[in-house]
Length: 121
Image (cartoon, rainbow, N blue to C red; front, side, top):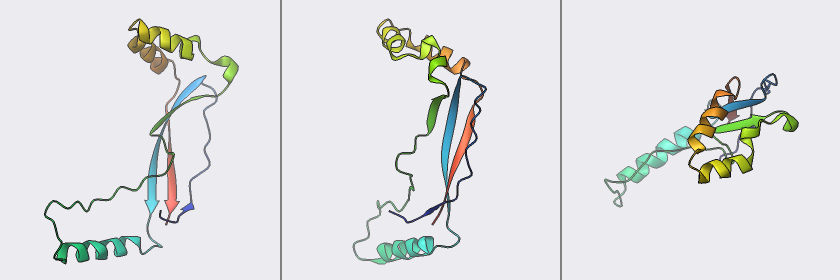
C-alpha cells in the first residue's frame, strides 16, 4: 500500500441524461515522494544479486482498490429505462438477445463522461 492524498477534482455529473457511462482512470503524482527512486534502487539490487532470474518481471502496476474502469450511472431511480432492469437482462440473456439490449443501453446512455482519480504519493 502506497500512502497517498486524494487530489481529485470534484465530480460534476451530467444529470440531463437518464443514464451516463462514466470512464475512470488513475493518475499518480510522484513529485513529492521517493517511491520511484526507492523502486529503481530495489530493481538494481535485484538485478545485481546472485538470485537474478532472466525471466524476472520488474514492471509495476499501481491500482486504486475498488476502482472500476467503467460505470453506468442512473441519476434518478424512477426514470430508469425498462431495458436496463435485471429482469429484462436475464430474459434477453436466456433468449440470446443480450447483444441487442447492450446496444440499446449503449445508444441511449446519454453523454459519456470521464473521471480521473488523482493521487499524490
